[in-house]
Length: 325
Ligand code: ADE
Ligand code: ZN
Image (cartoon, rainbow, N blue to C red; front, side, top):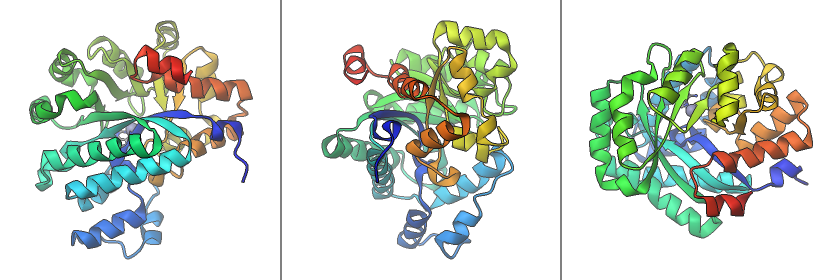
């Protein structure tokens, strides 16, 4: 099979949740390995459940699925499988969200989550030449005190974590809830990002920028409701990590043909293309590129721009950026 130019191009993926890369087959295998009971007999039954009215409905199924992840080996296997799959899409740089709060309440040691994922990143650098690292995710529906406790637990891994992120149910959980945590992470020298403007209002994007002082926005597509914000994002070069297939599956847009990715690109924003939670939303990063290109009629130059933006937006130093651009 010949690959299109965008499929063959070396790419960065900046918005992928490692837990959201759990394929149905692996979910079932881990359930058996760890003797966790799940209400699905096979992968087809699981896939049939991947039909969501909104973000909340997805998150409930996603959290339930994560209950099979128990040991350091599980987190290694999960991360390794994603990185090997990303390599097949010619992804050369990955910044992946990982959410300890999804696991430690079930008795999984913090170190098992982090060490498993980090070891898989180390191995992928040698096996595939993939660079990148972990974005430590926080659950936005939990309190700031809980988030501060996550940061305290992360202290021994402080130098191995790339960035802080914020995820989970957006509406009613504004970025400003986490000011202190972001101040702390900034003091540690971490990069900063946050989900905003996926289901929530443009004001949450403004808060993430002005209060949390994030360097980029995960999703951000609802910025379009505020022309002044669109102008600001373009002028300041704030990257958006957009996930087109996710947005359709979670009803942010009714269909890919109605997605605003192309309009935002044409408005001068640094839009990037990513997969979010690929098995749940029907495709890894190449599928996000090719299906968006087909549905929106993206030109070859626009596709190249999207690929390039991935490296412009990445948390890498200038020397690595120059090598990638
Ligand atoms: N966690 C995993 N996927 C997410 C999404 N699309 N929005 C918010 N939190 C998430
Ligand atoms: Zn996400």
